[in-house]
Amino acid sequence: MLVAVQHHITDSRKWPKVVESLTDKIPTGLSVLQYTPNAEYTMANCLWEAQSLEKLKKFLEDGLRGVSRNEYFVVDAAKSQGLPEMVH
Image 1 (tube, helix red, strand yellow):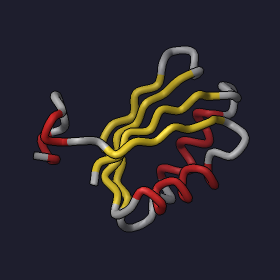
Image 2 (cartoon, rainbow, N blue to C red):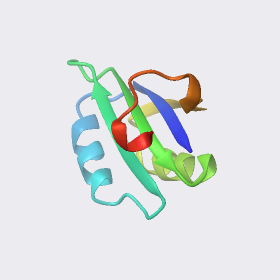
Image 3 (cartoon, rainbow, N blue to C red):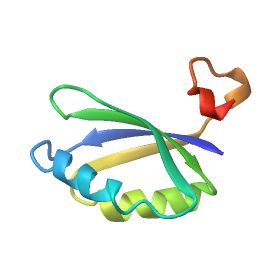
């Protein structure tokens, strides 16, 4: 399944280092396909391929605690445009 995540970054100073450290710890069954932060590190969007929404939420909520509030939704790939080629 594809899951979009919108991150409302609350600590822009820590955000880049936290994201970098999480990148090395992505568990089996999760894969980040896109990462798009704004220049100020106040917002970011990610697109994930995940075995389950719960597994992704646990990984991100644990790893991003104290640096962002996160919103999640399962993507309807059939109605989407511009998805990475690997998804089709």
